[in-house]
Length: 279
Length: 324
Image (tube, rainbow over all chains, first blue to last red; front, top):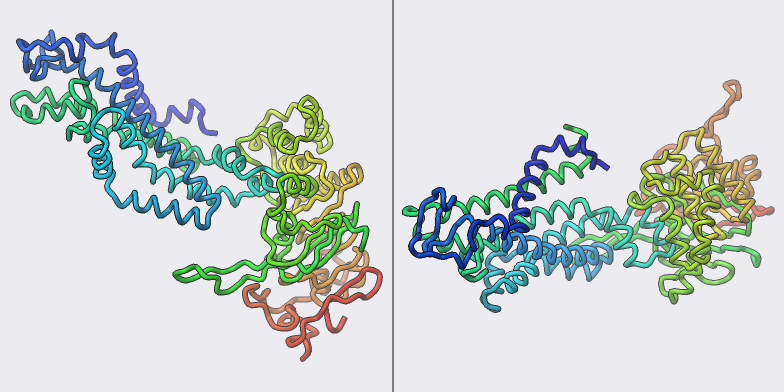
C-alpha cells in the first residue's frame, strides 16, 4: 500500500486539502470556544451592518450579529449536512451497486434503470421537489440530499464489482463455500473501497454546495440558525453596500469545497498506483 | 465404474453469445462439448490441450463455478451437477470435498486478507474443528506446505509467486478435501519453483490421500504427476490413457503432434516435430464431423461427415479417431 508518509508528503493537493478540511472541522467542533459572540442572541441593532473592524473582525449583518461567529457556527451545519448525506448516499449506493454488479440479470437492469432516471433529473431540482413536499428544515435537508444523490456511487461500485467478481479469489471463495453476501461484503467490498472513498469525499463537497443552494433558496436550514447558504441569501440585497456580509460566508463555502476536492483528488492519486509511480 | 470417486458424463458447457437489442442468445461458444471421464480415489488425471480447448471450463464446471449446460457430474455416486439448487447444508458438504488451485498466484488470493484469515474463514464457514483447534490446524497446514506459522500474519503481497502458490494449496487443503483440481497450478511459476510445487503436491497427495485433476498445457509437468492423461481438443476428449500408454503409443494424430513438440534435452536425438497446419477452429463454429479434421495429416473423406466416438483400445486406452 502506498500510505507511507513519503508518498503522502509528495501530494501537495492532499496536504493542502486535508489542512483546509481539518481547519473547518476544528471550527465546527470548537465553535463555542472560538466564536467571540453568540451567533443568534448577540444581535444588537445599534451595530447593524458594521464593516470589519477591531470589535467585529468580519463585520456585522443587518441585525447586528457578528459575522465571524455566524461563519464559525455555520460550519457545523455545512459539515454535518455534507458528511451525513454523503454517508447515506454511500450506504445506499454501495449496497445497490454491489447487488447490481454481483447478481446481474434483472436486478442489474432494474437498479441501473433507477440510477438512469435519477441521473436524468438535475440533483438540485430533485432536492427542491423533495423539500417542497416535506417542507423546509434541517432534518428534511438530510433526507432530501441523502436519498437523491447515490447514483454515482452506485454506478462506480457496480463497475468495480463487475471487474472484481471475475478475479480468481472470488472464484476460490465460491468454491470454498462462502455465501453470496459474505463474498460481496467480505471479499469484494474491501478491495474496491479505494475509488468509492474518493468519490465519497468529492460527494461531501457536492452535498455542502447543495445545502448552501437550498438554504439560499430558503428551503434549507431556517433562520436564525446560521448556515452559509442562508447567510448569502440574506446578504444578496446588500451585495454592493455591505459586501462583507456575503463575502465571508461565500469564502467559507469556497474554501471548504476546495479543501474537500483537493483532499479527494489527493486521495485518488495516492490510491492509484499508476500515478504514484509516475511522479 | 463403481469405485470411481468422480464421474463426469457427457458434460457440456455452451456459452451464449448475446447480441442485438433484446440480448437474445444468437450463437453459442461450444467451450465443453461432451466430455466424459472418471477419477478414482488417490489417482491423478492430467488434462492437456491447447489454449481454448475447454480444459479450464471443464474444471470450473465440475466445481459448479460455471454452470453446465447439460451432462452429469457424480461425486461418490451423487449427482452434483446442479449443486446451486441443493439445500445449503448439502451444498456445503460437496463444496468441502472439491477444491481448486488457480494458475495465477496473484489474483487468486484476496489482497486484503492475512494468511491466517484466508485459512481460518473457510473452516469457520464450514464449522470444521472447534474454534480453539483451528489455529493449530492452520499451523499444521502451513508447515505441510512449507510455510512457517509466523508468516500467518502477513498479507499475500508480502510473499513471492511460489510462496503464494503454496498459500493457494494451503487454502485448498484447509477444508480437508478429497479432490483438488489444479488449473495450471505451476505454469505461472519459474521452472525451478515449478518442480518444488509439483513435488509438494505429490507429497501431499500421499499424505492426505487426495485425488487430483491437473489441468496443464505443459506435457512434462503432467507426465511427472499423472497416472492417466486426457487430451482435449475443441471441447472434447480425443484420447485418454494411462500415462505410459500416451507417451509411448499415442494413437490420435493430435496427441502425436502434441508429443512431438515436447523438447528433448539431447541435441543429437533426432526429433521430427509434426507441424500442424492452420489454427484451432473457433469453438463458436466447430467443424463438422471430427473436430480435428481440418488440421489432421491423416484426414480422409469420412472425417468431415461422421464425428468419431471415443472407443476402447483396451487397457483403459480410449481414442476418438476413425483410423486409430
